[in-house]
Length: 143
Length: 143
DNA sequence: AGCAAAGCCTACTAAATTAGTATAGATAAT
DNA sequence: ATTATCTATACTAATTTAGTAGGCTTTGCT
Ligand code: FES
Ligand code: FES
Image (tube, rainbow over all chains, first blue to last red; front, side, top):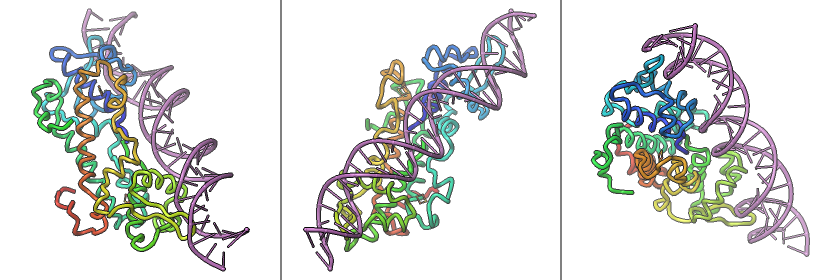
């Protein structure tokens, strides 16, 4: 139960592209340098994000990546869903993992906890992270 | 980002003990048989649960495990925290994983999403799982 | 007393997942 | 043409998770 590096790096990648890609494509070499992340790994992470229409790519020299949508339209939930495997709980994907699956009362608990996790991420967009200190999601109070 | 088998099995273990341990200790051999889980794995899972005061053990023949507290006092959050590693997000535990950690805006997002996950589990107790259909936690509506 | 049934504990092994690398190819600006 | 960039697949290494093994401890029973 650990958030993978893919998701963590993916969020930072998008944020970096959002910050520097206003007027020109941002190439991954830049991102790798600024964020101190391995280029080849970033390349892998960028692909599903592009395929899903979160990033948009420009090939060739002076190419790079841009956000495919405004940052207000990109939720962290979408990002994490693309980069983690879809399902957080094994037995929800593969019923054979639990005997008498129809009656297992824990099933629903896991389902709901995972939902709560994604609901939280759904409420946070890239835009919220670009303007720290005035974000909409700072109102929860807890640390 | 997968809930581990330890947590899934641990919840089923506790539930089984809650169901069958009203008047006598439940031994793990029974649980392993009823739940179709590996005995030796259950033994490992039971230990931290006992050390944390969730289970209580009786040694010797006719021994086994009992709940150390009423099921209304055992939240799933406590169980999962004991069985998963404590921290869901690596960079919250080890700041060196992210450069300029003080300014990384994603940090807080992960923190809050993890919090939402555990908050949900905190609101569900073993007792809720023992009486399916009349549980307090069914009111969220979503599937 | 002594046996057997349980839990207790540590160490080990195997499987699966994650993290990261390598290599080859496609596209387009210069 | 050359070169910078993305694209795609395949591979390897590291780490984590899942599960096993073996021996020790406690205690009820005869
Ligand atoms: S269905 Fe998931 S543990 Fe039973
Ligand atoms: S502090 Fe976690 S990704 Fe930057």
